[in-house]
Length: 486
Image 1 (cartoon, rainbow, N blue to C red):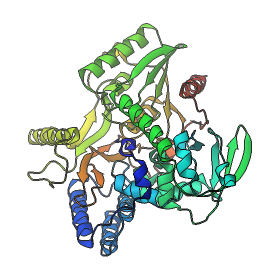
Image 2 (spheres, helix red, strand yellow):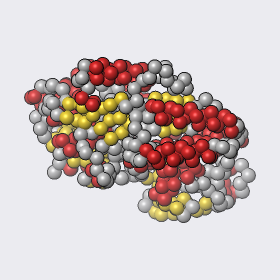
Image 3 (cartoon, rainbow, N blue to C red):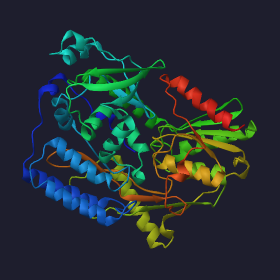
Image 4 (spheres, helix red, strand yellow):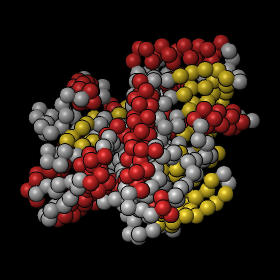
């Protein structure tokens, strides 16, 4: 799963420059490319909804683009259409021109907000932002502050849950679940708030909690604290990159084995297999019978079939993985052919065709490979999930819960436990330059589809603390997981 916080880099000049519109002809050129790539490269349009609804949405999109739309409105229309597929991998991302239009509206509060879990928290403002945010305000308004670390309860008399329902129309998620939408809005809440629930008043009521005291205040909307946001987003982008390079960590703490997987982007290959073997060797030698697997914020990457053989043994069915839309002889020229993901798509397509020719593909069925029997874990397992647990991380949580009787604590995983499209390819629309992600592969867990796909993901113990310090937050979740074994 691709994180886009690195896309948001703004400068002072953007605050006063409105974005240009594309002509109707340009819009329709983009729409033609959008439809062509979506229909030719998205694994399954009917993954969680009736395919006819997607075609109806595309017809509605054609009607909207018959008239000139601003770039922000173009983004909203595409995003709302893609969300109907109910696949969290399949998204469109805003670019600088879209952000320009949002910032030029000067319809933000003079605070920076971001999510920790499902709690909306106020960030400390950089002093450089104050002159811009205070321009044109009287002394009374300039002195209004909300302390950093406060939790926002309501904005304009709407709860955060109510605002997120509006925001959700412009964010994609598996099975249209709200949990993954919190994760996607985590760093850019105010942008999506503007799309789904724009302010229409000169003074906005805010209720918040600081140090157990509930307070309220009215603030005037205006210039966003851009420099503070950029600082926070740069830190987030740096951390995300670090996490993608981390194939996993293991240690034994207080007689519990503890795996921390921040991402599965690099969790494959010989080096990773050696890491797993050495970790389970330690578990065996230390006679560890309690295992914690922490998947918070893990948006996926490589499927963890190799990990599961140490839990369930050899030749156990884990589901299917299929390239539903293999590489064709000629692809749309606006798909990025130089990205690592496209090279993976080419290799996977060739491998699948080879297996099909040999008649050993078996519709993509995956079974666990051989493993040293003495290393198979036979103790208790607790899995920690949250709204950022997605794609292959969510499927791993599913496998552990249903095949190894693991308990789940934390918050509901953002990804499906049943089925999803993956294998992200990057499309850049030629005129608006919006980047869209389509997914030609489809993965299936070993489970039969359920009428309510959310029941299985409900944690045995729900945790949603507001702990600002990351180390203290990690220690809290470890302690709760350890106590679950009792």
